[in-house]
Length: 479
Ligand code: GLU
Image (cartoon, rainbow, N blue to C red; front, side, top):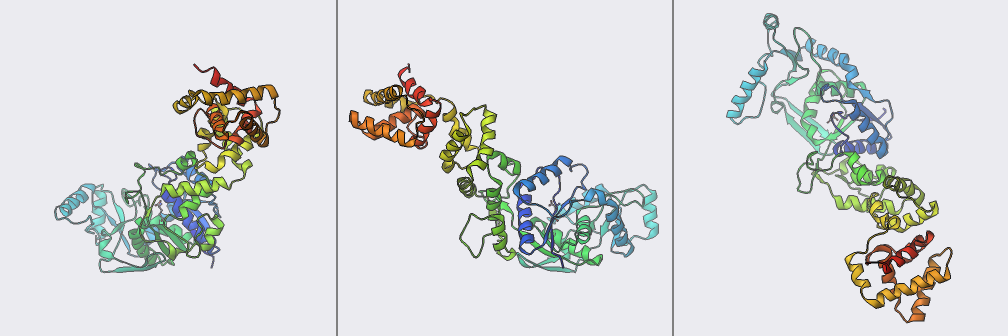
């Protein structure tokens, strides 16, 4: 039988980390077992669901490289299908109309609260007669459809991550609401637990992998599967993603939308690589830099942790830096050039761009680091305090005088790294100056400070448009 997995996002917000990690685990496992990865958009909440969020989720999945195998299904287009199944549940006596009003429910809750009890419906309308129903309807009362939950039942399933899970019927909050309120004999809009079961059955889903916050839903859904005589899929519940303090990562307090990670300068390949380690680690390798294909080979559900997974920025940054390091310079240029264009920075040539990127890529953690790190190559950086102090010593400034004269007199064309080293060696020898001092003074002239990337490689870049002469020369016109 074909193995089929799905991601079932609700488009009520931007594509976020939790959903992305669930998508990744489903995708990886689908690949591992040679199955299909499908998408279902759970947009039955008409008020909160927005088409721009659906687009954002699908775009985000594409960005991460998590492609799906069939046209996504939208729940909003299947309302009549769900209603038919609700009718069936009514017919077989597994569900019933419940007329309890909002006020009556509020009263019930208040009483339960007083006694310190969790909210639970008292199933008061489970056994209404036809006449009672008629009478409620004639009074203009609205009703929901409730699914009967046997208090004495024990629901058990073998979770692929957590092992045997047992849930008691009496802990499921009373009979389950399947549809929103409606007037007369109408059936209101179907709700999550019913729609999920109908769709997972319709889509022939064989494996459901979702967050542990759905465990009690799974217990409810298993009862619906059984009532409708559907075949049960395998269930797995993944650990939550936690922040540094060990609390559930919230949209309010942390970066959670995938767009934000993208904008911060994370590479999709690095980001999925990191996400795979959020709650999972491979058994058969110590390697941490792995492609999606490699991870899917190592991946297995029992290796996913049960405990929450702490989000670790350091590890994410390290993985990202490793991907930038091994990235092809021309590919990296495509991305970085966009940043430069945005800043309005113009470079002397494509070759110059590639040389600059090769120079910077080993020290980049985020793609966006390219902006700060390449800025001194495009714009003349001011001489900072440490640079000014260095140049206030006349011997240091003298070094720059020798270099400037050399550059002006010799009018060197195409200064490359060998030539740059030669110049330093020659001046050092002729003037009896330590090479280190010469290099330091040149660094101050180029970067305005005593730190920066490799000096000789930088010089080659500055020489391309005579910026080396300008930078050394400006040290003599400083106020
Ligand atoms: N729409 C649900 C969510 O976004 C899907 C849960 C499921 O996978 O069944 O949490």
